[in-house]
Amino acid sequence: METDIPTEEIVSSTTIYRGRVLHFKNTTVRLPSGNLYTRELVEHPGAVALIPLLEDKVILIRQFRLATGKILCELPAGTMSEGEDPDTCAEREIVEETGYKAGKLRKIFQCYLAPGYSTELMHFYVATELEAGPQHLDEDEVIRVYPTPLEEALAMVRRNEIMDAKTTVGLLLYDEFERQKHH
View 1: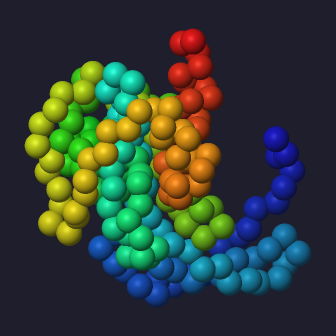
View 2: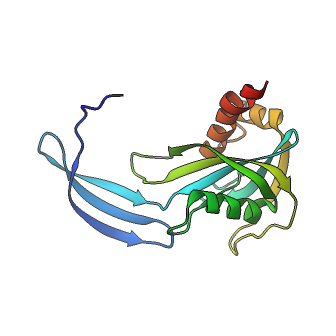
């Protein structure tokens, strides 16, 4: 990794909008050249995504996403509350969205989703030893649980039927680095 890349110095930052979860900022930075430039940033508290495994199935969810105008097939995921750690969020989100309680949660990686404009860091967990129970959806959520054979979920990614980035990344990395270790 290169370590000699200069960083940008923040000169000023103005909050344009402060929402329930997202905050939008115009931030003026001084580039290494000395020139000033404005960056538009979205501040996000971070999130978790879960890869819940039940025998040979992965528990996916389906929900309507207004930004796409489509019903998407996704891994369960959720935004961390202010001050909440990722482990606690993962425990909460799997029950809320799927109804399953995880006997074991294991963090496998984390990544920025769109570092060109957002601070969102997503933490990915494998959830096993699942125990079924009722969903505890947020008031504004309509989610259907969709248990899918893992091989079929991977085929859906290859056929571009799963169009959600976190789901694509989570399933492919789980398959490549986690599942293959045990075969």
